Image (cartoon, rainbow, N blue to C red):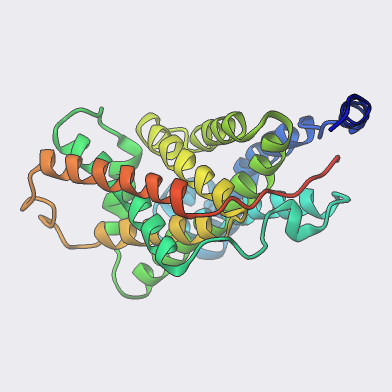
Length: 292
């Protein structure tokens, strides 16, 4: 390339405006702030339906602790998260499927199986750390496990749908789909994946759950960048949540037969091999280019 061509290329590059990111953070903040009122309204309506308006104040907390209250609140959260991503992508001038990276991924079925194993290994690693008392107690996770552990029949099916499958769709649409796509276009894959993972962790509030979400977000973010689609991340996220939900059902002592050290080492090895496979054998498919 001659000197004139180089200069022209630099001029064109400078002329292309960098994608705006304030819309991403505004969408994240607005969506998170909307979660509380939507959940409160749902629980209030549920309390009125179950106990009548005159007992709203007295029954609100009790209703929130019921199976339908917990699953309904979770579903409301997922609807808000998915709705925020869909609305923000809908008003973008970029085609909807490109804005959320919903196109077909560049990963084989075998590669998809490897990615699922890598995702599950993160959960196994945190289980190993927990059994070794290397993580602080998490009241939120303990309460979730107790609630799911008491569910059977239709309640457990509802938990699989709302706690297992729904977050895999809704959270990936917002984070790896809407947020990460724009941040990587502005600041590159490394920074985009990291910031998205941190925001994903902040959503989960609880410190232990939040750290787990950050690590999971880093892996799913890398998977999204390699495959050029959020479909693999949706599948991995949903499978991980389904396994965690079913593992919390009344089946105790399943992990006690395994050494936590061996669990941790095996999980680390599987995660490392999964990352290497994605690096070496999954061709990179870039995300959508956009300016709004």
